[in-house]
Length: 318
Image (cartoon, helix red, strand yellow):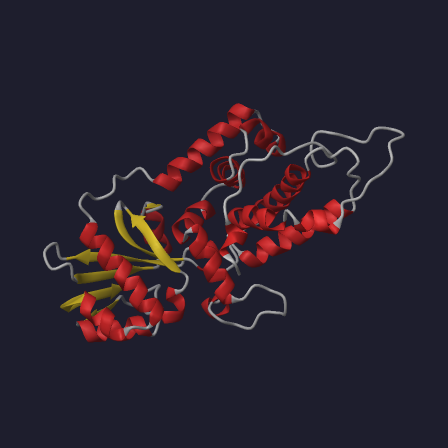
């Protein structure tokens, strides 16, 4: 998938019409949306839907649902086609988010390479989409309420005014502004980032690159010879935490998780740069690193997957 399909779009008024503020005027001829007019807005709608839902497959479904609704509607009073379609798409996504009574716990293998039906986004396309937006952002968005997520995505990522967001949410503009503000604080985090973290950033970025590409030697070179990796019981799972010692042993374990590394990205963990693994924007585990201040080598890796430990962490966009 081309990255342009997930690019930011400038703010567009959400317009009037059957899904906006307008209504049918008696005696006016009915008009239908042309397929080519919808296709002109597809990439924008996909970008909005992906940030709303965190899954490219679900975003594609939302876009298709938008087309079905829009093509069946009377467009004779639609003054802004792009804004009107955005309204339909965001309401569709909002319904999906509100219906998520519980998180769907998929097997990790499904996200990392199981066969998909023809025409569905491939794992590679899901990875490209997540990288384009940022895995940490998708994780934080997944912690927001549906209304907070909509307000933040539409305003902060697509520059849509609060009065138009309020109309979708059936709230006041002031309430919509508060929703976006709360979401923004979660995205940015409240824990100050650790100062002078250049060595941390270099080590974490290099670790991610080496595990994604399966570069064993590069990974060994990043690790202190006596590095200690600790994984809590939810990682494997096992009855007790797992402790792995030594650069070569830790690197071999990391090579076994190369596929999972594709859905991993940098994130601030209590203000310190680490990695978050989140297929489809749903947090599975994090890796916290201790980096030697002089050598820049990784001396310890803490792999956290227990729900209580994950909930205690403040995860923010790096």
